Length: 456
Image (cartoon, rainbow, N blue to C red; front, side):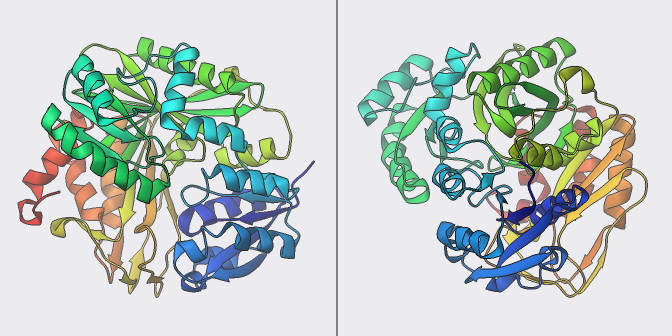
């Protein structure tokens, strides 16, 4: 059954991104917004817009009933959650479908399976994917955790079962640290995710973070190759590329095939990402988690494959079978995305809400800006500081880096500090240009590049 009216249950650049694809498909859109977002571009772009509450996310974008009421009031027949907020909330997915609407994403059952990190590890093992050495499920006590940590050898990571986005992770180097940090990690997990369950994984040195984009319709599944996401600060990605700069073709083929295998094993529906750690020293890869939503970095995959992932999500949610076969998917060239945030790198990435006084967005061949800002826009202090994503494409990585440098030089925003200067420095770094980096590289570089910022 075709989708006629789509409610966008998100904000900022991803809301704009969803509206654009929906409009091209002839789908009317409804944008919900908080009191703080009445002037965001998605409100004026949508066919209808409805205020759902106060600026605080808990009173608007995380308010399930307010969003469902907006869908009922406007006659929506589908809801796209974007990323963040309620995108991986299994109860919300169930409530949407229970109200007779289409949830643009996997079922609540699948979200529960893959959102529980310990359970996802078990499912991955059953599907034949290698996982990072660690506990096979949640640990029952500190003593049980100490026993497992001793077997897999320190350092280890204590991770929240319900964690995500780099949150809920602590690295410990010895039993004393484990005994001290585990109770704190459990309390933090309970407060942040409503679930205090923890599990343990071994720390993989010199690891690269590689993720595979998949599309599936519940029966068939394909991959759209991989993305390199190793440049991270506090386990949050800031720079992504496609294809990976660190993997030989043989490993790439194995990784992508493994991601499809897992998607089929859980009867996945929609767009998703299977994430791995790749050990450059041994060539071994390990499953770490699956994200059951569209990713912030999805544009680099779109740039190298030419496939509109949001359009495919909407098509699958409408009940149509996957229209793309694996043989239809090929990559061309190289794409890089950097996340432009209203933050000051020189002041320990202090958030900088304020007014965009003037703005110049780069363009030209192979340049894409996914954003939701304009001159005069007031950046609210209530949400993530992401202003937009600068994405470039060129025929190979060297020319893509040159294009990124040119685009960053053209990007001008007056009124608040942004991370654009950080990325301009990174483009010229010899290790970046040579692809010599892993998940720990950026934080070491930041300590040297911004010594005045203190602890990063």
